[in-house]
Image (cartoon, rainbow, N blue to C red; front, side, top):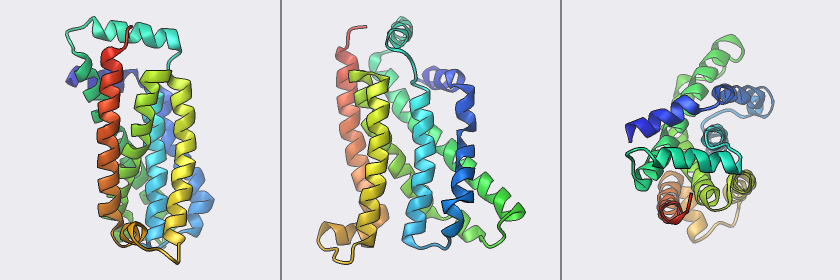
Amino acid sequence: MLRLILKDLYTQKKIAYFSPLLLLLYFFSMGKNISGSNLIAIVIYSLSIAFIAYFMVTYTNFNTGESEKNQNRLILSLPVTRLSVINAKYIMISIWWLFSYTSYILIRIILMNVVDTSMTFNQLFDIKVLLLSLCFTYLLTSIFYPLHYKFGFRVASSIGIVSFFLMTNAVGKILSSNKANGVLSIIIDKPIISFSIIAISVTLVSYIFTVNIFTNKDF
């Protein structure tokens, strides 16, 4: 398991490690108009972190169809099980999220000291941003992995990007709704608990599907 995790770290494209710099574009454009610790600001920060983490997850799986098959054959020729391969992939989601979140913190600290002095450390280390960004990361990648092993990288990554914008739009509508009731009111009142339950449920279903697809796939 550890070797599979290290393999993903070693084989990650070098350019992917610079992807958190994309946050600079966000902070210097839309991000500079968003401040405070209100729920909308927290969700936007969380989504930006999740997007970078999702990008790193997908980029480490970037391959053409034939090279991906050859890579999977090589991995499965080692003393590892197919289940351990998938377990490593889902654990790596947390590692790429941690890299994205840490990069977010470092970039905000630099900007706070060099460019924007209005931000406080309480806003910077908000536990809600940490938890929601992790939830959003698992929601996005949970869509990606079953599709990736079933239809390939291009289909999965394309649908994943569309899902990100749909998720962003849906969350925005939920938070800005003036007539929220039932489930929507619960999500607005308890966003951390609500999105945690949703993320855990979706990830579990995704994991089961991915294991089933990968276990029965002929390489």
